[in-house]
Image 1 (tube, helix red, strand yellow):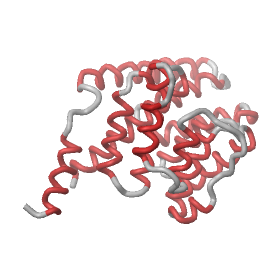
Image 2 (cartoon, helix red, strand yellow):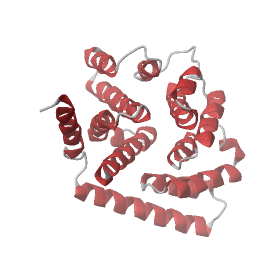
Image 3 (cartoon, helix red, strand yellow):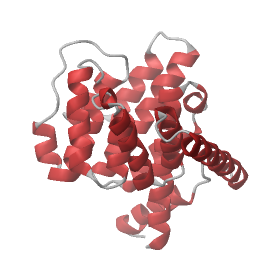
Length: 248
């Protein structure tokens, strides 16, 4: 057997592995999201100027993979309350998945004026720039950070600068003197962003491997608003990669 044949077999096996969620779990999750969309729509009908209704429906639409509809609700939020513009990171991610990479990059640039510590914002700006203008320009335009941020984001940022490998990031997390919950948190984000970066660099097999581990990590969906949202990002991205592979 040739090396290429072995590699192709390994790549196919990665996509053939058991998904992180069972069909029953997916069906239940989608049902819950559809109910949230329905209830939020009722609230919007009752009060079309209530920002929270668009926020809740926009989130549920995003989590259902209905990205352009999610963008529309997030845009409506900003129309109703312009003060939300700079800090609306969810709108930036929705722009990204709706394929409007230039608007996504702008959102994360504006967010940097709102919060110049959060490297997670810089990560998404890098992804958006890479899709809009290519990896070389995205690396040259990485946002600069002078202050410390929570791990593993400084380490992940170094991944884009080619100063660290995914293996080194994961090894550092396993060796850190931290509690189990904090370790789960760091592993969730590390696998998520290593996987997303592998997609940007056109390595779908590696992306699927890491995104599967991010989605299977129980910390994300239980940890609150931001982590839960990002867990859905990983889930949707994983599903899209697997679906694309099946079409080949």
